[in-house]
Image (cartoon, rainbow, N blue to C red; front, side, top):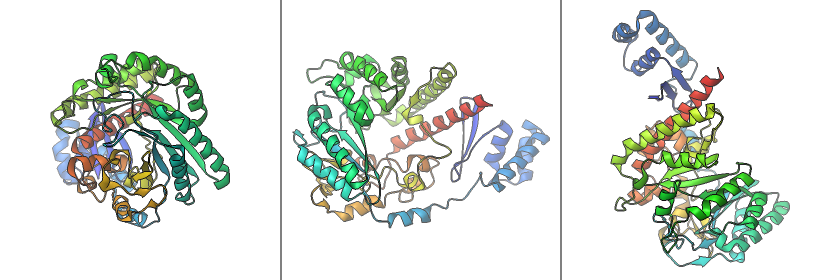
Length: 453
């Protein structure tokens, strides 16, 4: 399978199955587009008036060489591999600990209902968190590196338990030859020097929630009394990012139908000095006024193109920054299993409620149909686990023929379920935006390569 597109002046050809990327001239671009459906004589007849016989002949020879070299029109030989992977014993490697089902903001788009997750407000006791870490160690098999995200609601509302659990985990590392990678997601309201110092010492990554421009952030992320949060959190986040040397964090925003010009929010964050930035589309029912709609897609595509071009220019000026959704590794990247099956929700990755229930991920918490067990009993609904284990790019009809399948890994199971009632389906708007982001990410890599020549 081959995917061709033009972006910011580059003619890009992606060989999907090998992962090879080719930046070509116009003649080669058109030759490749005709290669599988036309003979060489037909290609020459069709393209000779535009490019001349010599250029077309050279383009056809180069195309034939790339095919012989195994970097163009290659076959997909991964389906048998993923069938083998699904037969392997399940190993848990990451937990999302819901330290707090409570929050001190009232974000309009919050899927967790102000941190309550369709239930009651609660803080995770230390004993429950300790049992969760014990569960992770016991179910991690031979895997040494384990991940734990302190999540909410707002986890700093229960920060003493966060500190106690980190200490407990560090003590267990030596006993079981494990290494915990702790992360923290925070809205910044309670962020202070003590929390920053602790996080800089113990947290491998910190996610700082802010939506960009003040008017955008304050409209979507207000306090319960309706006042905005920007003026309080923005300077704290700037200080925190600098204290971490501008690494090991990212500021994460959400854009909606009400700020389709989201590239301005990403650039606003960059202008504030942040170098690790993520601004992601809201996922919400179409009945919500701020939900992304199909008719929004052309403008959003333009915004991604505009942001990608600006990133290329800023890097040339020594003012570069990372945009989370444009990060792509064309040479190494995730392992094959990860490329095919994604985040591992419901199998390798689980969410833990304050009272110790296990769910496939944070977006399923509160839906009793997806209750998988507890941290004390382990996963008891093994049939549900197996359903998630079977979820991959080959279990979804739309993914099989999609050029992005090895980069998005089939998309988010929770989004598929919430929009179609089936984790083996796809969330179409999310798919279209993801494909555009991948195209922009590859273009940025192409620009970097040409700069080095």
